[in-house]
Image 1 (tube, rainbow, N blue to C red):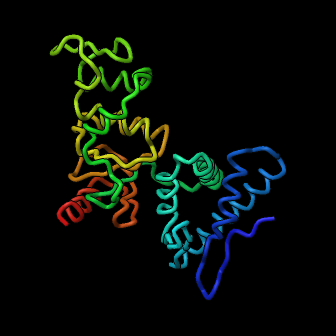
Image 2: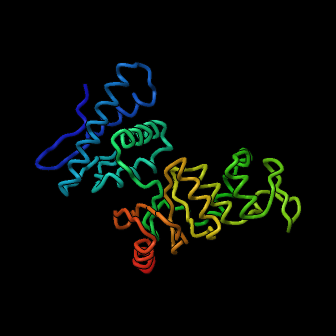
Image 3: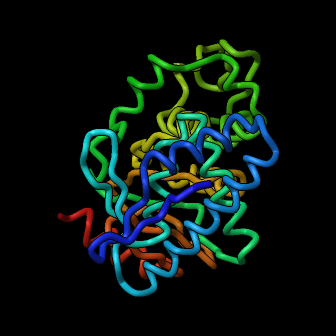
Amino acid sequence: MFNVYDIKDGEHIINRETFLEIARILCDRESADEVKKAEDTYGEMLSEMLHTFSTGAVVKYLNGEGQFTNFKSINQFKCWLIVNQHMPSFKSLLDYFKLYCENNNILLPRLNIAFGDYYESIIYNTEVYFRNTFRPEWLEEEQIKKAIRDVDKSIVINGNAIESPVFGIMPPTKLSGGVKTLMLMYNNPHMVFNASTCGDNCVPFIEEMIKEKDILIGLYHAMDFSKKDFEAYIVNGDVVINSYEEYIELADKYCRG
C-alpha cells in the first residue's frame, strides 16, 4: 500500500507524498486497517532510517518548497518532528515515533538543547511573546502553579490574578521572566524559546516537564544542569551527552561562536 522509503542513486529519500498520507491516516484514524498498515509502514521506515544512520549515510526529505531537509541521526529527525507538531498530523507522527522507540528500547533524551541562534525561529524576546499570547487557562495547570509558587513565591488566585508577597494582587504579566518562559515552553512544545531568560531556579521545572513531553530549548549560556545522570541532545553538534562536563564543553564551544 505504501512506498515511503526509496534509495535512488545511492541517496536515501523519504517519499514526501506517502509520508504525508501516513501522517494523515495516523491523525484521522478513520479505518483500523489503514491505521495498522500506516503504523507498520512508518515503523519499517524508522527501522530503515536507523540502519542508514548506522552506516553514516544521510536520509533526505523533500519539503514543500522543493528543498531537501537532511537527517544525519534519529535525534535530528525527532527534533524535526518536535518543531512541526503544531500540525495535528505531525503530532501523530511524533506520538507514534515515541511509541516505536519505547517498544524497541531506543532511549532518546527528552531534553534537546540548541545553543545560540541555531534556529532562526527561536523566540528570543519571551517577554513580548508572553504578553501577546498569554491565555488565562495556562494558570490552571498544576505544574505552572507550582513553578509560580516556588520560583516567584506567589500564589495563583485565578487566570488573571496572582498574589505576590512583593506586589500584592498583580496580573500574570508581572511574573518573573523565568516563569513566563516556563509557561511558554509548556504550552507551546513545538516552539523554541530562549531559555536563558530563566534562572537556574527554573531547572527543576524543566526537568519535571521532560518527564511528560519532549522539550527543545535555546540557550545562550550554560544553564546549571549539574545534577547526577544529566542527559541531553545537543542540536548544534548532533550529539547526545551523558554528563554535565560534556555539556559545559559544548556550551563553551557554541556560545562563544
